[in-house]
Image (cartoon, rainbow, N blue to C red):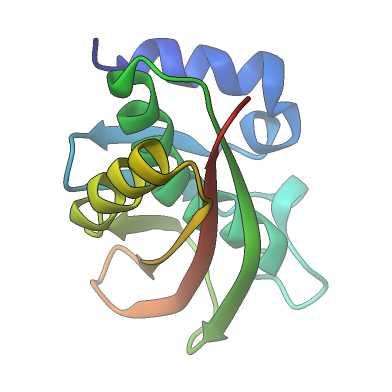
Length: 151
């Protein structure tokens, strides 16, 4: 069963409250792509009047993690997931509404199949790109997700 966007946003309220209060919202989700938005406001800003880097990181991570959760649920198996590493690059001040898009969902299926068949943990790097309303890239995040079959 696919994860619905509204249920996922409700999940963030209860399980990821700092992301929810900062305005991080899932907008689109399928097996290949996820889109998450967040708007620059006074409570998620840094002293330089732009969005705090950690808020951008929460939105970027959610765009990768939402697909991971959805595809893990689809397997019907108990599989743990965890971010092992991340990299970030900031190219412009993040102001206004920032949209983070990850199109690396195709990488998840292979990692899940391998961890299910071998019982060994797998890793996958996924990229999320944040753009402002003018379409200008403000930040790029990469997350190394680890997946492992629970025993």
